[in-house]
Image (cartoon, rainbow, N blue to C red):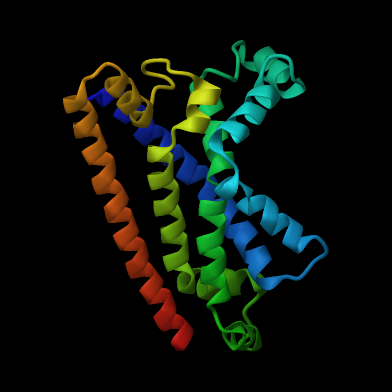
Amino acid sequence: MDWQALKVSLYLAGLTAVVLTPIGILTARKLAWSQFPGRNLVQALIALPLILPPTVLGFYLLVILGGHSIIGRLYEDMAGNSLVFSFEGILVASILFNVPFAVQPIQRGFESIPVNVREAAWCSGLSTWQTFWKIELPLAWPGVVSAAILTVAHTLGEFGVVLMVGGNLTGETRTIAIAIYDRVQAFDNASAATMSAVLLVVSFSAITLIYFLTDRLGKQRVW
């Protein structure tokens, strides 16, 4: 078992979920309750990582974050090191690649809230912010939790984007998915099997919990 790779993966997954959850909540609420020009385009851009090959996204991120780009040069000037082939680089890549997993479940959660519930809150004197904080968010929490779980689970299993942007640096960009690949290449099937079993258990547990939360959303919708 490559504990160092697992530590990097868990740290990456945790930070990705922490960053994306508030962004996902605000974005999902806007998409669920508002109609605006370009709404379908925004939803298409959010869903794009679901069908785009990870190596394609990884390539574009490598170009955008590299030392020959404006973003890459600005980061190097401020931080003193390259954004690619670093933990910060794979964090940026992970955040972008996990946007649909953070936004879509929360959007479904907000959409499950009956309109008359919000209207009743306003009629009771609650402001828009109070309605969001006291009514909408508690009712949409299964979607929020589902998004966080999906983001963590998907980050733990991501291979292509992380490898393209971060390479395979031990203790910094080498995740458990990359470690499994390395062990297979080295014919160390026992270690590969152990790490694969860990990801299998995590993935199955995440899916089970998400189905449970989906049932909760379904009951709310019936109510």
